[in-house]
Image (cartoon, rainbow, N blue to C red; front, side, top):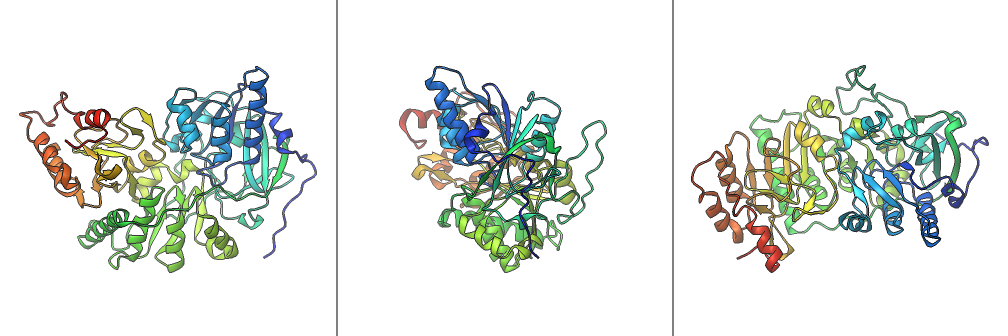
Length: 498
């Protein structure tokens, strides 16, 4: 099948600098992108350059930035370094932006990713002046074919006054058909989402907008700014093997159906190791993914037949692997679908489909509470992302982390988390390279014993045991006087160890 890129004359060709002139101080802009995949690149860089020029001239220039999730350095990084972001939501992972947030220069509020589009449509975040989206094609009648992510781009295009398009020729027009664009009605008229399997397609292949809203097109040819993943090391391999062993045992015990259940996995090195271990485990049959991000390990397991289908909102793979996908696009389009994040992360669908969620924690405490977002309770790392969407609604919710960090100076298992994103009520299983703690059906003391015995590094077990059993009375054996002793010791000495 041949595909030809549309070149509608009705949309002016703009340079990035010309596009940036449509951005004014105080605007709120919705950018495409979910991870660096599908994120606008050239226009944000031009906006950053304009911000620097305005600042040098003594004029204010800052904008509100809303995206699907994190983006690439050309967007979050450039704008942050130009001091051009007044406020940001719902998620980020850029070191320059993180610094701006943690020093108070940029206001950031964390948000569950599934609720962002509805909040935007209802006006919770105010008026959206512009949507800036990356596309591989746009037609004269206003059909925008996105690239490697969907995220919240359909909603941004719906609510924004005007739209700027980066037409990125790096991505083939043949991507049309990999997207399933569906926006639910909002309350009080919302209907059930008509999906009963991971493979169901319920929407259109393109984002449809009033073409009169499109200001112009900036033509580019740039790859996604996706960094490669680290090789699996003994710790991540141990975590992955323990996850696979747990799921294999659940399957054998009849607590997971013989046909297995769809998997959601977070992003990063641990997630890649976990999925790789699941694919290598002979007790786990071929399975489907219902997740946010389709990453490297998913593609490799899809090629081997261990993953049969993947539904997500973002295709976030290393550059060489994306080239391979594009060279075999017919194969992968039959096995991958990209949806808006309010569908990929939708609680109704997660509960209906029986998703097994696997996410990564920064730290956990001995009762099963999880901190996914903050270091030492104060400094933001990335954000909650979609982990809450999945954890609260999963058939089985699993959190993973290494038992120690910084060469053993930090125990990732502490008496009380310094910031809580997921409570003990939502966290069912904790897994480190040390072992597996199944917290289902256990009271707080039993959870503590299970976690300390199976997940804590040996160098911290004795002190955590003494803490857990040194409190007299109370349903949850917690002592506020020393709950943060590990954190205080680290801040004072550089190590949590005595």
